[in-house]
Length: 351
Image (cartoon, rainbow, N blue to C red; front, side, top):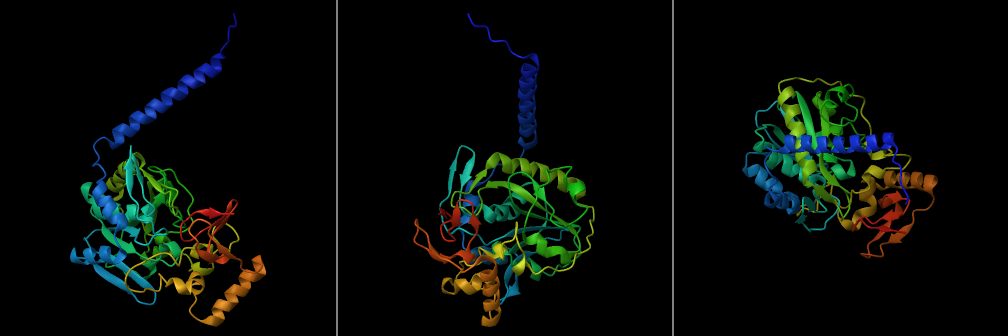
């Protein structure tokens, strides 16, 4: 008969681990117990609506449209609050599927239509009053948030355009210590609030529980969303009357910013897919002008200079075709990964 001895230290560690998991689940249930549920019909409507329809409804509800035809538009509603909430209307994928199954929502547009649902539909259910800014051009790093002119000095701003359950503050230095009391701190590359430093107040970007963003396989974990809403409600209750001033840093030309390494203009990689609205906008170029739109240059001389810089760094721009959807695109129009190139039309990777 074989007798298997168990190391007491290992057994104790396993037992403590199980207890910690139970305590964490209990804490999660306590935090989210009295929160309103997610209205799936409202979320579906926000995810699938054209930008123009959302903006039209926003205006009917008392909002205004700002911006200009050259640089793009934004929608703003003044609710008399000292806090500004932000989300962006543009999205990468055009797939219109929406499904729910056992606590998961599947939709390719959750980044950032889940944020739009949060500021328009969910925060009011929590009794949280905020001014609302809905932007365009975020996915191409040309957020129209930069055009926004505030009606007053805000205490602080919050965006809901983040995967998972952390929060990021970008270059709003000194804000990490405050936010870390309520959220795990992550590292981010770009979102609308990066273009809002001219408001001269601190800002944070809160995760809302979506994952696999920019992909047709994007999904949302409802429990994670509720956890983040519980955390944000506590944050808002404590700091809603606290001014958090910020000194803007020197301006950066985001069109030439290297995101996550030495990749020329990679933050502009989605510029040709966003904003498929009825009216033509500078932030949503027609597909036939895809090459120019990715770089964001209107004159041929500047475009050629950018192309020469690309060629010098990476060699000749390679033409590719997606084996799944048939889309033809150039290497410079997408993001390169270890497993190939991401098709800018369907989001799948080709080798």
